[in-house]
Amino acid sequence: MIGGSVIGAAGWVSISQLRKCICILDNCEGDAEARSFADLNPVEITDEIALYVHSGIFTLLGLLGMLGFVGSLAKNRGCVVAFSIGIACHLGACLSSFWRRCILNDALGW
Image 1 (cartoon, rainbow, N blue to C red):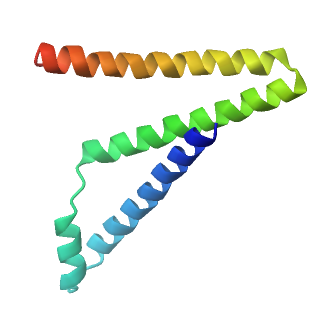
Image 2 (cartoon, rainbow, N blue to C red):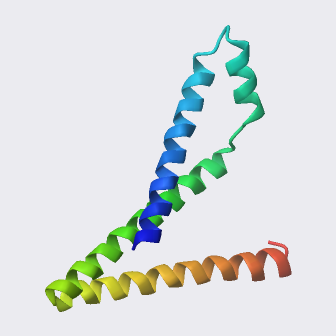
Image 3 (cartoon, helix red, strand yellow):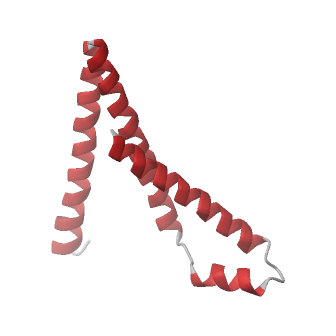
């Protein structure tokens, strides 16, 4: 619960820093220092999308952890079941992405 929340928060902070860099790049017509900083730290669109997805998934993981914790304290079976299903889906997504990376990219060259 805490780990997912911390990673999600760090991702959203990175996204806000990325937005600041884009604003600096857009407004640095005559500012050579800002332009050189933006040129030295380019971010590809695929990396930006991955950052959004990563932040969203770990924020959802933190919320699921809180749901399970509150559900277990309140002895609410529905919250605990929703927590376990959410964790199982998260584990499945992690394993499928790992499988895709290891098997399809490395072995088959996809």
